[in-house]
Image 1 (cartoon, rainbow, N blue to C red):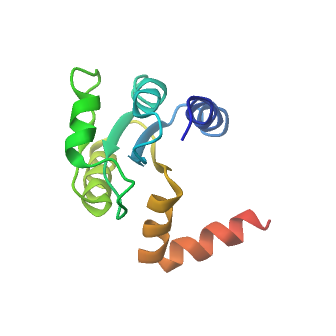
Image 2: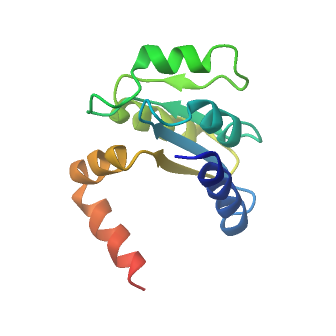
Length: 130
């Protein structure tokens, strides 16, 4: 959730998944740097799906809209991560290029996603222990 971490994420994805187009689903706290997220994760065919998470610290839909105004490529903004994920899956299904969906930003968002999808959590931890 810092400019360096967003740049590192892009570099890691490009290194490990060359030729893949990332579809980022992101949520951030208000005290983080949404402009850095938009600058470092947008472009090069990447798609951004922005969403709040369930915390008073989260950027709201309206705040995301303010930061995203005038950005190219234009990020999509959703009221909940589940809707962002469903839209990312539709984009993935229509895409001719290899793509990957990546949740990023706040650990609070990651916690919501993993709590809602226990199999994903088990798989993520089993992959980490290898």
